[in-house]
Amino acid sequence: MSENPGLPPSAIQASREVRAVISRLRRRILNASEVEDITLGQASVMARLSGKEGVTASELASAEGVRHQSMTSTVASLAARGLVERSPDPEDGRRLLIALTAEGRRRVEEGRQARTEWLAGQLQDKCTEEERRTVIAAMSVLERLTHD
Image 1: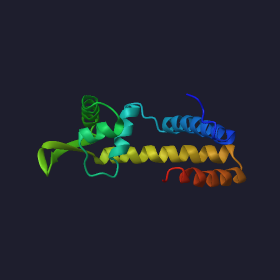
Image 2: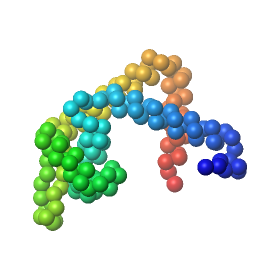
Image 3: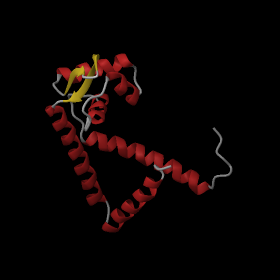
């Protein structure tokens, strides 16, 4: 892939650095709440279910970018652990809706809390107050990139 000659070098460098740092930081944050009895894919499904009343396996598969059969297996594994439950769709009894159980919601919240505490601790231990303010300012710049 050739780089667009119309883009300034600073935009290209910023793009590379932001992507690399976000990718590494995402892995570190996820590892901060790693739970040994569930996979990263299962944790992702649980996070996606958080705050929702019920989602079909097809919707989850599409959102996660996996085959329906793979999602069915993931959901079955989570259900066996008591983290999700399946119930008939009130609008279409042939379909099952998947939702977190109380234990599943607790686990999602604990994971979020662990990730928040890890990142806040890293920012406290490795950054000055001025650097933390710079991070906050940079986040508002990056947030603009997420809007059309």
